[in-house]
Amino acid sequence: MAAELFFIYDTHCPWSYVTTRLVNQIHQAHPEINIQLFHCGRYQGDDGINPRQLGEVSKQSDIKFNDKYRNALSQPLDSTMAANLMAWVENKANHTALSVLNALQKAHFEYGVSFDNAQDFDQIVAQFKLSPPSKVFNRDKYSKDAENALADIEELQGFINTSAIPALLLAVDEELILLNHNFYLSQPSAIVEAVELELKNH
Image 1: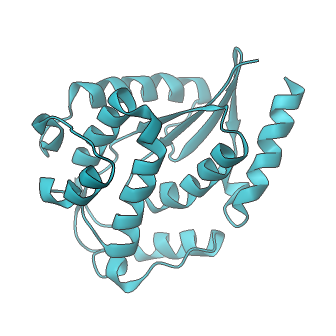
Image 2: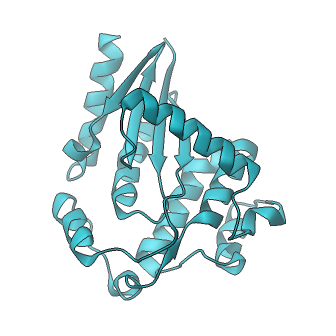
Image 3: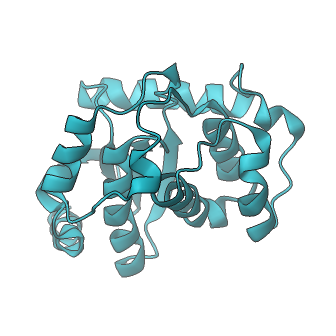
């Protein structure tokens, strides 16, 4: 039986941030499940996060957002560079992809790093010994890798009939199962049981 987990997310989306914890739990419990990360590039110079949305995220999870992040809420968000980097990592350094995603989200949501200029990535690039090409850090254009990822996302969203993010999909052999991440935001470890039940049923 072959199993894969598909995670559609955006590095700058607070709902994606809290859902990444579920992916971490699944990976820790079942490292044999191949994880594929798809950055959807939702933010491109868009308005900042609505404080009411952030309050709802905190309400449904146990994560509290600090002032460093909250103080930047009104600023436009642009995740194009992060989408380019994550697409490159998925293709060239896949074994580090989940760790890089966690590092990006930690820097953004805990320290307010915007990731809208190349210098914002310096620490993470050094930490994971990455060597992405300069085109990754083009804020005005998706890289070819990122465009391919967006095409894959569109195909996956066609299967689940929704473009809402984040989305967690478990593929077992030929079947694709949408996992309702909302059920597990306050208790991330509980999603492991849900995944194991699906694996048992298939």
